[in-house]
Image (tube, rainbow, N blue to C red; front, side, top):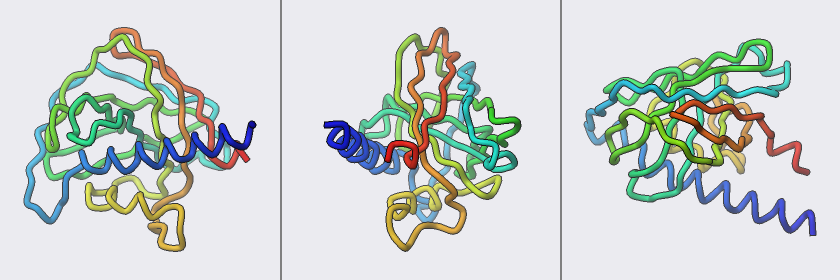
Length: 172
């Protein structure tokens, strides 16, 4: 039974990754991203010490239109360059934006619960085109910047939330 729950959790995580990538756009399309200021913050704890010095980003929501999803990073710019939050002493705090379309993100100040997909990356910045490669992480074509994958349950109050990282490898 426990293995079935893990299996369905992995399937759900893969679905979230796939749907969220739709919202990231494509660097080759010439899209310009509109990134608003945000009050949203996500603090991630319980990150194993071997990941100190790496970076992390996250997203939640599975709406394939890109609306209603949440995106967490240290920064995102109008060219689609995503800056991860640097992990230090097993923790990191990221900004959280609400996706309002394929190429725009605005303020998040919600009072809701979300399950975030959290991606540990081995370099400070990646592009939205890099994000499209996340679907390859389960095979031999994993991008060289990909380090690990996990998730965290977050309950937000006025856009501020905390999660404990659970790595996929800890589920098996």
